[in-house]
Image 1 (cartoon, rainbow, N blue to C red):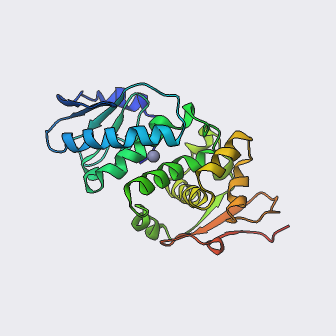
Image 2 (image 1 turned 90 degrees about the vertical axis):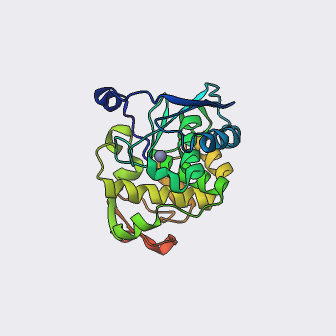
Length: 242
Ligand SMILES: [Zn+2]
């Protein structure tokens, strides 16, 4: 589910174009084995127009989806968006529509829509929230997050540009992603869009969602206690509020 930009990885690994393909209206699905091709093609035509419309995306390019033989992608994720295509590992098969929808949010988001200024920590949360909402699923990362438990994350994770974001540990990234999801769930897409359009500060989203204090102005750590649902009290700061 990571949206890491992995063009170079992909080139280095010499990813081979899958030989089987089904042409759908909104794009092409390629795979090494035939199982699931038609399911993904149908899901693509169902989800792509909905997501493009939700995100008000200007991207009109035909979508390319690769269904891999391996359980996970070369970045050890269930799915990945690599700019020119979406890749899904065999592990995506448990919830194919939801994982495809998640990657389609990356495809139609974020650079070519009014959501282009949402902070990095909200990219995954935005994709997760839309994907789960459209496909009738609850949050898919609960199991991983229960393993993470309680975690302190530097404020930098929330205010990061891409360079800093890529330096974060996987756990820090997951904790920040989870906050991003809760922010989108709390605020709703229209509010997130208007905040992005008005150039809101990254922490303003979490403040608006009442996950951190409105008047907090310090630097430091945000501690996230992750269970199946985040409540405001599960996110707290390492210093007294100003
Ligand atoms: Zn993702």
